[in-house]
Amino acid sequence: MELAPRSSPVSRWLLLLLPRVLDLNSFAGAVIDWPTEEGKEAWDYVTVRKDAHMFWWLYYTTNPCKNFSELPLVMWLQGGPGGSSTGFGNFEEIGPLDSHLKPRKTTWTVPFYIFSESYGGKMAAGIGLELYKAIQQGTIKCNFSGVALGDSWISPVGKYRIYKGLAEVSSVAEQVLDAVNKGFYTEATQLWGKAETIIEKNADGVNFYNILTKSDPTSALESSLEFTQSHLVRLFQRHVRHLQGDALSQLMNGPIRKKLKIIPEDISWGAQSSSVFLNMEGDFMKPVISIVDELLEAGVNVTIYNGQLDLIVDTIGQEAWVRKLQWPELPKFNELKWKPLYSDPESSETSAFVKSYKNLAFYWILRAGHMVPSDQGAMALKMMRLVTQQVPHGLG
Image 1 (cartoon, one colour):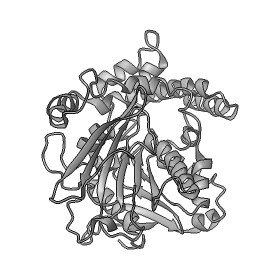
Image 2 (cartoon, rainbow, N blue to C red):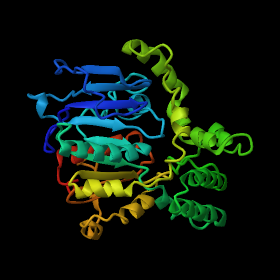
Image 3 (cartoon, helix red, strand yellow):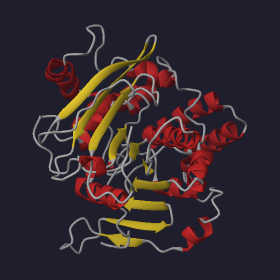
Image 4 (cartoon, one colour):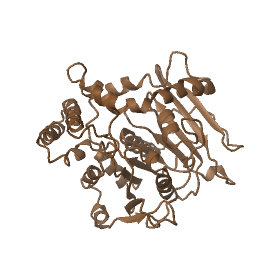
């Protein structure tokens, strides 16, 4: 797997992963030809090991260029856990076509490194570190350029420190913190679900993914069934079910399945998500700040970006875990002032704020919730270009 230098100007391809089990060597047997026409695609359903499979979908660049070998790999990891990169991430957020199969104006068929969203950020950090180690050991040849952690579940504890003002919420938040500090992660997950139910009830059904909207009435009702369903089922309904709407499910299990022609008959899109989610109970609340620290110490470019209107992974909570980093350059990073960014050079309306020092950057995306590319596509695309092209972050 060859990646281009960090100075590459345009993308090589966009790679979307739907892993049942992810292995860095999964692509070793795949044959990928150089693109000869605009809009070319490639995909495969591969066996990682016995009873473990993964589907990947690759879009080649639509940008004109003379030498494709100079362009970086584009990869997207969805959250959930159990959300689909090839489904929701592709057709609802960043792919070349939307869920109506219409061309998207801000498609991410231009370069980024390992970008991620939500729980995918935890995976991106871990995969990035393992990839770096493999490169150092000589087992993988790859010009690894960096990770971007979008509204990422790096330290769930950080967000609970801002839940103050309502005694009932504060009480549960303290219990969550105590459980995490003691390493009782399964208990912390249960308390996390309890805290969110309290917030939802006391905030008139606030949408955890965008605080300016309300949760879907059906999902709010389902999440309140405390005595008939487990806390994990309620959490799944709140945080993953919305990634598998009827229209998207029909698209993926209908036209897309027919197009791909390789998905086994006994596999349905979205059918595995609940199992993934339920089996991650003991991992939900484990922080991975130390992994981000290792990436920074290794000199890997780390970008953090967050939507202003996100509640499930709020920006203040993200800032809280960043302050816990042991990276020696952190004090200098913290001293920096936020600089404004504009999605349109001719616009005077601020679209985001950023600060960057050496190999750490933090973007605060305005008017965006948890799904930044969906809410602010133009600004998300500009941010991605800044990250991958290494254009000075101070440029608006």
